[in-house]
Image (cartoon, rainbow, N blue to C red; front, side, top):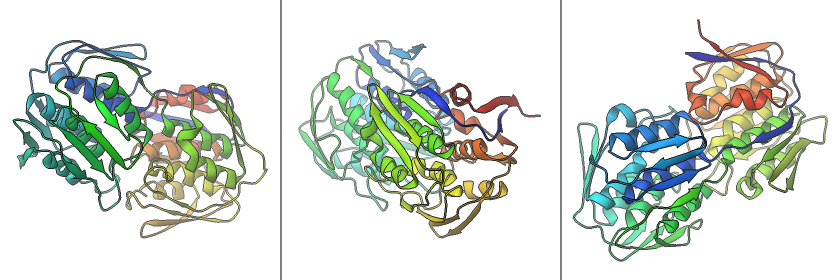
Amino acid sequence: MDKLVIEGGSRLSGTIRVSGSKNACLPILAATLLTGDECNISNSPDLRDVSTMLEILSSLGRRAVRSGDSIKVSSGEADSHTALYELVSTMRASIVVLGPLLAKYGEAKVSFPGGCVIGPRPIDLHLKGLRAIGADISIKEGYIIARAKKLRGAQVYLGGHFGSSVLATANTLMAAVLADGKTVIENAACEPEIVDLAGFLTAMGAVIDGAGTPTVTVSGVKKLKGADYRIIPDRIEVGTYMIAAVLTGGDLFLEEARIEHNLALLDKLKETGGVVREKENGIRVYREREVIRATDITTNTYPGFPTDLQAQMMSLMIGADGISVITEKIYPDRFIHISEMNRMGAGIRLEGSTAIIKGNGTLSGAPVMASDLRASAALVLAGLVAEGQTEISRIYHLDRGYEHIEDKLSAVGAKIWREKEQ
């Protein structure tokens, strides 16, 4: 098992090329199950989660091969409609094969998903959406079993306790494109990854209106064709490196980043003293003040502040002048990283779903353990500014969502490398 070692104190400066979006790539790969034709997906990130999805497609009988940043899913039909526990249990997003299998073949058997431990993430909205358009669903021996002779368009409301759900919207959207008639999805997720999925489905021949808004209308078609498609840049990777630039007092150009995908973060970085400039084919990020200013954050569904940047923003607030408050509205239990940050000398107190961060802290390098994907990135950021050496173990979480992070950071001045754990 690998670990990351970081010598803190380096200022980041230079260019980082942003990888394709993990959270767009996974449902787009699942959507290739909706056709028997060949599909070519470019700008796909080289990540463990993407490799897992390719294994799932292979287990279902679809041949998917990577070459560089391109993935070719060969023509042919799925010869299995069961997504096995051994694969699905390692990645929550694998549940998005449920909708396409059901829509294309009339049946699907998908294990309950796994992934990061960041608190309860129920799948009730997935089942609600599919049942609304005619699926018969049962749960047996840890598997979701869905059947439908023919899905039929309907009015679907996907409101949940914590707002809309990206993956439930994706599953319902993919199932609806082959349903009879019109489906209207209310309280749909508005994230750029849903817009990208809708773009791919449209390239395949689907008829979709309103993607990126709370109301998405789908007019079902009888068949979808293969398509070539380029995935959007990863806005969470962009956000992580934006925070890193401000945190280290650095100056980074993030190639291919789209400023419109990170407006909530941009607003908060401005409050801290960060400067973000839109340039041709990317954005430049740096800090214009010597001192980082404290700020308060509440996570919310898009276009609100993303929960996937909450932990990274906490690393920035540790070094801010004053007290910051971070309230987690999406996953109230997503604070496991606090204990590791406090081991490095941070002053963070948790009260329910709110973290109170006492700034002006000086972090000391220490052995720490990653608990989930975004917490891993936050510990990397903390290590960049800590005094001495930080060792981060269990970085297999990090490899699920950040493509060659140590190489990208080393290229812009960080002292970071990978070692085998003893």
